[in-house]
Length: 252
Image (cartoon, rainbow, N blue to C red):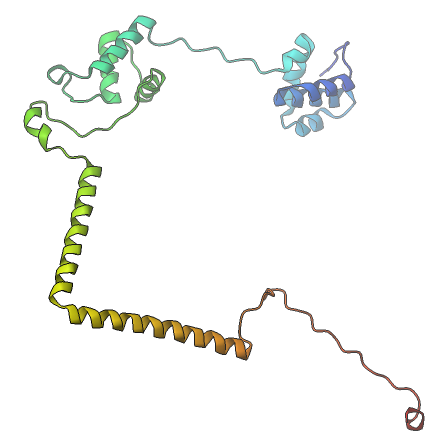
């Protein structure tokens, strides 16, 4: 394998790799630069994340087209299955909706549109392709409540209530009913309600007082939480040890 390109050196290829906007092109430039510098072809290919045969193919492309040949070539676009006129008719079919007498359904599904396209245009398309085509044409999947084709809108139109409105009405009615019950019980049993409120306030006061006494006791016993993290205990300060030299007479 020969990586001979008379105009560029290994340093020039490394400079092209630094200025390239394509990562793949830069990686291939560095691999060919390593080969030009005398590195083994297998090591150069492994360092660039490719096989030796792949590096050989890119060297041939580089010898024929230079650095520009190291770019990825765009894949050829596949011919569209439906033409512009067929796409326009497809849009009209989707917007008009199905005919129950002909199509046998009340709303379009991908499998139904697949049969319609096959019957109208003679083109066989997968359901996934139908979904991609609908998304491309600006249609969105909307799942609505099924409606019988013979239902009378005049009869059912006045009884429809939105879920949010129905929930708000239910919650408001519940609050009003419970408030009326509470006020009626207060009016019928004033003394019971008074002593009940006194008992509730006394229980709340005793609970708070017990909590306060517990905190004071912990503080007096030194059981309160300190700001020092338990995972990092404080180091004890070692007291210096006094050493004495000489006999007892000198010490005295």
